Image (spheres, helix red, strand yellow):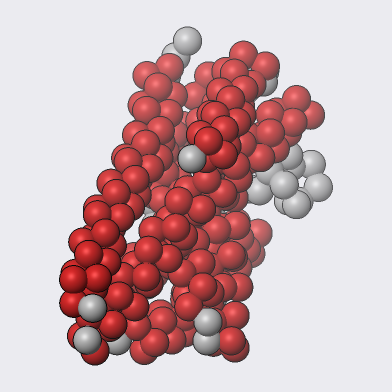
Length: 47
Length: 225
């Protein structure tokens, strides 16, 4: 099984990129959801 | 929420099946041995990245014609998703190249045009951070996105038009080129699974961009109040 370490490294690198991106989008979405709530509250207070 | 969990589960199952196919169903390559199995991640990611850039290109064209924010949101979402898949291509390529070619990288037409493609879409995303006004930002980035897509046919044609260190195409290549039928099946199944992952990421990213649009509207209302 020559070069199995390269196969392992490539798949690890690939899946890490996808996973990190998925988490980054989920975190940004959660932060924006909070921001929308905060802004809506400010808007309601102003009315 | 339930629908998104269900679609994520389906995509994970597809990716798991694709990985099983790549490691246990596809035969080992006679010349390269086990290291060729990187092909399933590398090539499927490349095709998916190019598909995503094509969606970005269409969305940019639609924005220029219609000037509706949703096309801008789709454009940036597809551009970013395509960039993620191309990043995987640029990481897995050198890991595969090193044991096979004896070098990590060479500036041949395929590798260079792919790296330029990556840089173009990084610039596309950076450009958006430089313009404050939403309509102007959307138009400028749509025009830049249309320009950036010019590199996609170059990436596709580079191994057909010029002599490269990178291998000849496995699909739509010269007579005698190609893969074993089982390898083809596994490769196309992996691409299908990757398209599922792309759809999942694109949908999430689009939702994020739509929320940004909503925030800009609320902020304008607050400023007017």
